[in-house]
Image 1 (cartoon, rainbow, N blue to C red):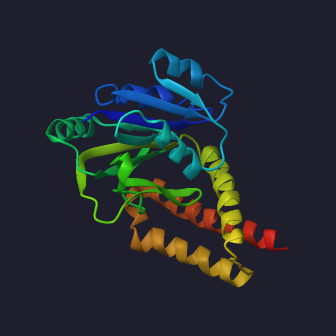
Image 2: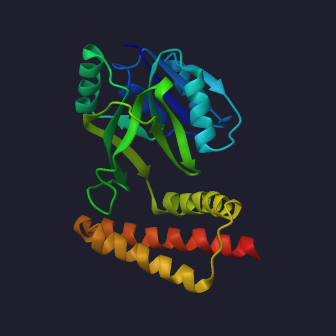
Image 3: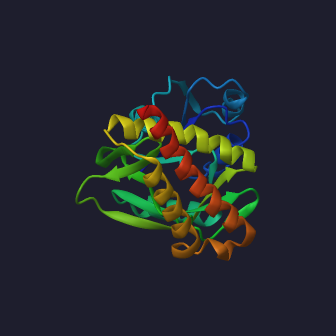
Length: 248
């Protein structure tokens, strides 16, 4: 029951070492697929003896599926560079590894936003499938919103412990990501034939704000929750505003 840990990177010198340190006890190999980083990402990875592969970036889904194709072992744990395993999650993986892995596993992801752990806003438990038998699943979805799907009938477990996600260190990081993901998402919507208008944009922004503050109880995370709620609404605005601009 050997496990390949797969990580895709681009200029991740700020995050990658924490991620690599966290998987040392569970990984039988670590494969990093990098889209030609210009910082110290490769240098840091080489310290940990990972298999470092450079590959052009054609999208999150495409890059993560390429990483799966590079795995030597039958079971894979797919992580982002800004994620890390807790000790409890590590112990849970090791226990399942010893007993015999199921086809796949869900796990809870806990996000750190500008130094605060977020327990509401719809951000927790943020359950993800991340550990699978690579013959039983693949990355699917619409970029940048990828998901690791298992085939119908696959046996799925749920691992104890959290996957820590260090999302944004500053508000500038968040706004930069909003623009980056907004452009990708808007182009995907356009390719699918989706269209919008100013009235619809306004409705979607208000709906997102209501969802965050009321349905997902963002206010329970205090000032951080309010910031996330309004910035999530702004992200919705930017995505559909970019789509509106592309239409014209």
